[in-house]
Each structure stands twice: as C-alpha cells, then as structure tokens.
Length: 280
Ligand SMILES: Cc1cc2nc3c(=O)[nH]c(=O)nc-3n(C[C@H](O)[C@H](O)[C@H](O)COP(=O)(O)OP(=O)(O)OC[C@H]3O[C@@H](n4cnc5c(N)ncnc54)[C@H](O)[C@@H]3O)c2cc1C
Image (cartoon, rainbow, N blue to C red; front, side, top):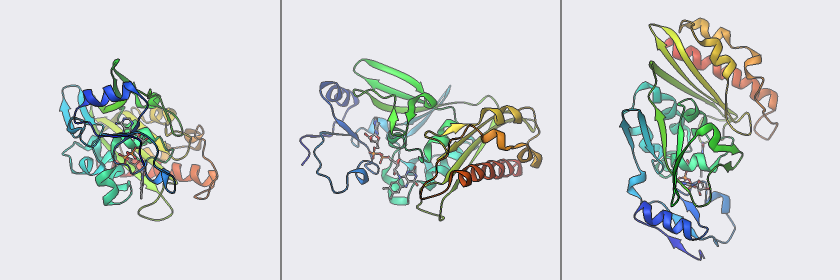
C-alpha cells in the first residue's frame, strides 16, 4: 500500500507537498508502474493528474509552451507548424494509442531513458525545461537537464512545469525517423530528429539529434555546421560522413550491435535529409 497518495488540484499545493517531504511524482504512470511490477507500492505518491494548468500547448511571442502534463495524444492533435512535425512523428511512436493517451512529455524527459523518443525530437527544437519549487522557478536547456541514463538535473523538491520551445528565426521544417526490430510498439535501436531552417531554399541552420546510440541522445554539431549555407536538395544527404556520427557511443545489447546502431543512425540521418529536401 502507498503510505500516502496525494492528488493536489493546484500547483501551489503540489509544490508545498513536495517541499515538505520526499514524494514520488506520478504523471501518466506509463514508465512508473512498469518499473515496479512485482514490487509492493510503498512510495509516497504525488499524482499530477488533477493539475489542469500543466496540460496543453500554448503560443507566446517568443515561442511555444508545452505544459508538463501534455500527453502524446495532445501533441499529435495540436495545431502546430511544420517545425513540430518531428515531435508529432515521435509522439506517434511512443507505444500504442493507450500509452499516448496517458504518457506525458515531461514523464518521457524525467524518466531519462536513452531510448526515449521524445528527447531527440525536443533537442532539435532547442527546448528548455521549466522547473518550479517553493524556492522559485528556473529554466534548464534540455541538453543540460538529462545528465545520464535515468538521471536528470531536477532537485527532489522541483516539478517540471513546462517545456519551452523558442520560435525559429527562419522557415523551419522537421522530420523524425525511428528504427526498431518491428514496425510498431518497439524500443528504438536508433532514432533521428532533424530541423532545418531555410531562407529561399538555402539552409540557414540545421539541428540533428540521434537517440538510443549514446547514454543520452545527442546532437551532431559537425554535421549541422556542414549543412549551413547549402541548398536544401537531394545532395544534402551526400554530405553525411561517418566522422559526423563518430562522437556517438552506441552499445551492444539484445536489440542491436553497436556497429549496426552507428550505421543505422547514419542511414536515418541521410533518409531524414532526403525527406526534408523532397518536401521543398
Ligand atoms: C507499453 C509501453 C510502450 C512504451 N513505448 C515507448 C516508446 O515507444 N517510446 C518511448 O519513448 N517511451 C515509451 N514508453 C514509455 C512511456 O510511455 C513514456 O516515456 C511516457 O512519456 C512517460 O510519461 P508518463 O506521464 O507516463 O510518466 P510517469 O510514468 O508518470 O513518470 C515517469 C518519470 O517522470 C517523473 N515525472 C513525470 N512527470 C513529472 C513532472 N512534471 N515533474 C517531475 N517529474 C516528473 C516521474 O516521477 C517518473 O520518474 C512506453 C511505455 C509502455 C508501458
């Protein structure tokens, strides 16, 4: 039995409870419960599902605010510009529809799995994580928020309240590709998210992130730089070289060898760029 099960209706109440004593935060529960199968539920729980203020996506002058408790289904159904296509495609890959209905964006980030599909898609959006506690609130760039497998920069008394996405400077479009051992309901062998910002057909900025090929999903800065100033056409994919993925640290495991992961990441990046060029 849970010693305590709190389900506050306001953020203030939630932060007060979290400041008072250690509590395990629960959102959709789709990572929480599978990790505890066969074990007694002994933790004190802070359930966020009654906090309406944490749900939904809104537009502000500087960009977009994705409430921490926004579900993957909410992401799929939101009216968003092509910049968010990668995030929407990633959302469709998170389990099946029931998991997408319950699972949240912040839960995916806080769980910090190396194979979390939301992480590369949000890294290429230059997302920051908003954290709140009784002590105040702070913004942490996503690449600093996840510090290792299952480890984040969140303090015990903090809640993730939102994920913030800045508006791009140019026309932006994005793509996401995931490779697993089968088509659906599968843990990634590798996944790739790409954003390209263009001006009159020329790439002004590119952001590319690879997941499941390192302890934490990571960007490919040397490739991003190599794409700047190039025309967004079929030739872009030919610029992808093995050295661009050299910094990845894939592992051998039941799903794939490290070599195959590295190769898959390279192929997915090329295919992603081809797809984005094709949409031009
Ligand atoms: C059958 C199945 C298939 C799945 N397939 C995929 C998949 O293909 N790809 C994928 O990426 N994931 C997958 N998942 C994992 C999971 O669904 C996602 O990671 C989901 O986004 C987790 O969100 P949640 O709200 O359910 O998190 P929860 O389980 O509620 O919480 C996860 C972690 O985040 C913390 N947390 C949650 N919200 C907050 C907050 N606002 N502030 C602070 N801490 C918080 C919790 O304390 C916990 O540590 C799958 C899960 C299942 C059961």
